[in-house]
Amino acid sequence: MHEHIRNRCLKLGFMLKESQQTVRALAQKTGYSKSTIHKDLTERLSQVNEELAKEVSEILAYHKSIRHIRGGEATRQKWLTRNSEKKTPSHLE
Image 1 (cartoon, rainbow, N blue to C red):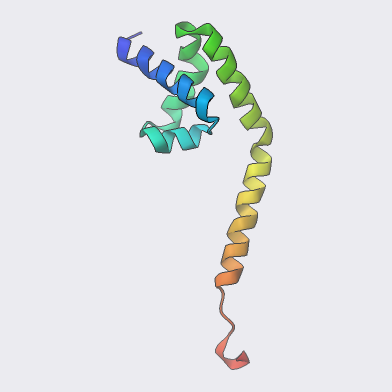
Image 2 (image 1 turned 180 degrees about the vertical axis):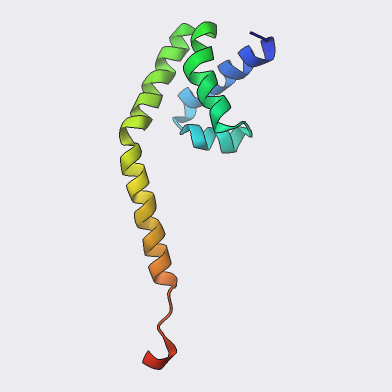
């Protein structure tokens, strides 16, 4: 594995451990793709730092266990926003 990939894996692992953010949030923050971050954290990190990889996998497992809640909340917020933006038809005013 190239040194820059090893360093990226460690950087992402420590960022996730510190911030507890989702892979999507890390991707937006770092500019790497979600696929790259996920592969670095789930496959490559264990070859670089096994202890950190274990901690990261627990965080990712937690995110996976609550993703249905996050998705439901996002949809709820979307519809609340969409409904509040609708205007009353002019003939009802």
